[in-house]
Amino acid sequence: MNRNIAIRILKEELATTLLKTYSVTQFCDALGITRSVFYSRYSSMPDLFSDVIQHEIHQHFLDYRDYDTEQIIYAYLKQIDRTRLFYINVYHLASKNASRHICQDISNAFFKEMQTHLFNSDYSNNHIKGFTSVLFSHVTDWLAHGHKKNALDIYNEVRFMLPSNA
Image 1 (cartoon, rainbow, N blue to C red):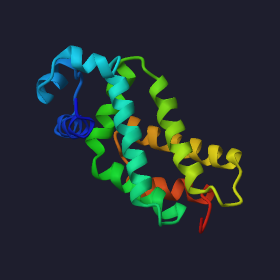
Image 2: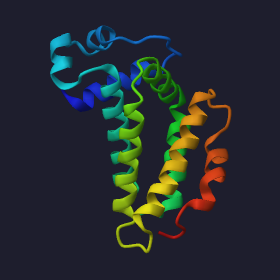
Image 3: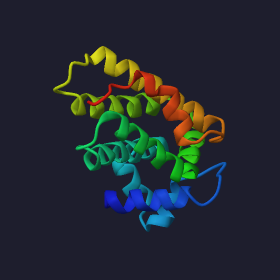
C-alpha cells in the first residue's frame, strides 16, 4: 500500500460529505486493496486517521520551515479551514470509535514539530508544550462545534501565547 496514494484517497473520501460512518472496507474498496493489506499496516481506521494527520503536520512544517511561528500556525489553521469537511469527519469518526489516543498522538506530533522549529530559540519545552496543547484544544473544539468560526478567529484566540519572531 503506497502511503501517499492512501493519504490522497482518504482525503478525497472524507472531503465530499459529512459522514456518520466510514469503514475499513469502504477505504479498501476506494484504494483497491484487500483488508489484509490494510491491517498489515494499521490496526484500525483511527490509526489511519492519526497517521494521515501526523503526516499532514510534518509536511506543513517542512513546507513552512523558513517562516516564523505565527505564520506557520496561521497557515495550518487556514489549511484546516480549507479542508474542513475532511477534518470534521476525522474528528467525529475517530470519536465514535472510542479512539481518543489518536488525539494524544496528533498533539505529540505537533509538539515535536514545533519543538524542532523552535530548537534554537529561548522557549522551553514546557512553554512549547503549553501553547501547543492550548492550540490543539482550540482546534478540537472548533471541529467539535462544526467549524462555526474561521481560521482567523482561532488564530486570534491563541496568538497571545505564540512565540513571536521565532
